[in-house]
Image (cartoon, rainbow, N blue to C red; front, side, top):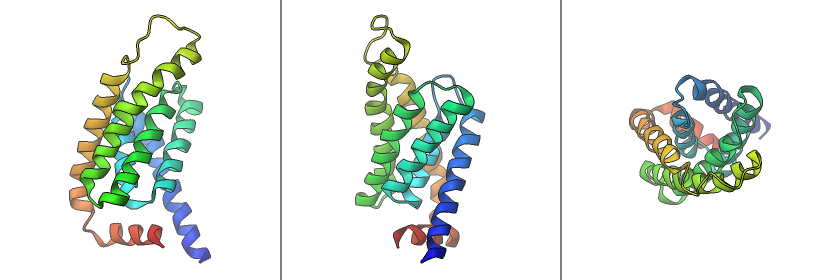
Length: 168
């Protein structure tokens, strides 16, 4: 039992590290497609709780270490949550991708408006859909990259073994 917890924490820590390191390397201004890649991959590997924890810890680390505004939180949380719930109940990569796109692209972008208005102290000059094109762009491109990676990875023995670790 203890060994399984250690495996789970190790995999979670590795996913967080990958997200923190890869996100700034393949970042387009206003978009973080690598976060979407890792959200979708985590949705298939881990459950909703672990995937959401991964996204939140990664967002906080990116905010602290890289000076990224709270958009990191609003973009990551809803995409990770809906991607993992989508996969949990649909058992298909497509459901995880739809969850990521809706969670990050739509919900995350709309929640970002009031968060950034509060963060910047400005109530004017922004409108509700200001972040939507960038969030959708990052979520769609990241989800497609994840889909291409997962086409090959999902059938490997190691991938199945990691999935089994989180199902127990």
